[in-house]
Image 1 (tube, rainbow, N blue to C red):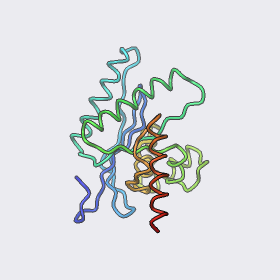
Image 2 (cartoon, helix red, strand yellow):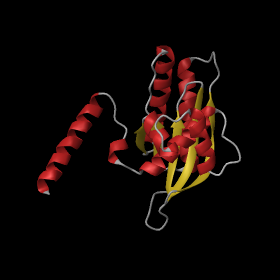
Image 3 (cartoon, rainbow, N blue to C red):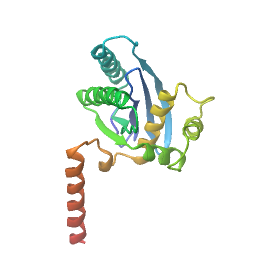
Length: 195
């Protein structure tokens, strides 16, 4: 359901990627109000060849997109300080999610963990339990969604709803991020000169 003047509803697909467990959430957002459409977990079996695990995630996200017709995908930027093996696998699952969304024509927005925490709790150093408690409160749930991947996907949706469709949050990476930042700075300079 596209955002229109009549409905003013934005349907957000939030993904917390992982190759064993990928959390997903679909929320409708309008004027700081959220309505849960669906949320859950995409799982893959340990021991399954890795390409098949990625294909399972891809197909599941396609099915979610076809069923719920979201307007956009909100996904968290990855940050791993230690386990490179896990980071690489998770990055590949994230890539599959972004590609599946792009195939469906969705605009992809990405947020840092700090941005998600600030948008959901108002505090960038919030603990995971604090974020989960706010997800429960903001969505009027009886209990914190489990497992953590699902609560994280809901938090990412809330973050996007509170942030809006900002150009700064469009998914870019690597060398693109640098050139995008350069273009933003140039545009800001141009706007300042016009004023």
